[in-house]
Image: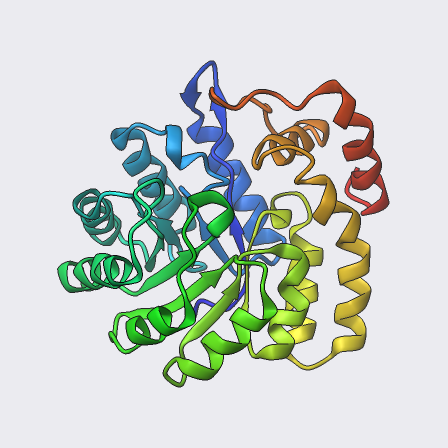
Length: 290
């Protein structure tokens, strides 16, 4: 249910406020373009600077607009276990299909703390839950042994793995229970991760190239690696350009260049620096989306 190209969707702002109309248009475009699921309130959705009320509203709007056409995996993680439980309960109440839960940032918990954090959320909320490991953002790496323990909890159904290590991906797949879902958290590694047994990606790139991302993942999941490689190399310029500065600065600038929405981000993020704009525009042109 949660495989394929799942977009880590941006949160559009207008004059400092959540732009619900732009969000609805983005979602409609994603579904029409073949995206397999919508993931609001992740890193790309600037969850760190949403108020609790805005966070819940973004999830609610996403669920309403999607209307069960594809899965909604709501970002509900926090470095506070109690807050993560509150957000996850809200996601379930409004009809999200699953929750995406980042490892606690800043706290730097030990592996046992990570286990107890996620186990507590799983016990508190009967909703499918996907772990999210991204050491570059959180300063903590959840090790395969910890993921394996968590995979034994029935409603912890998978992980978005963003360590950048294919060896770690291999160990997670080997050590976790059968059927445990491994999704790429790093767009350039999606194809090799699927070759190892991954089931898709929660992707930044799909914000600007949803059809090609879906086509790449579809081909790879069918074992058609020849065609999957063609899409991978077509998208490769975007994989780099969308991280010229901190995500989601470049992807919002890209969507603005495409005439889709405002590039407005919230402090402490700032608009894309002028020095990076030519390279981003060139990558968009190379990928055929501009």
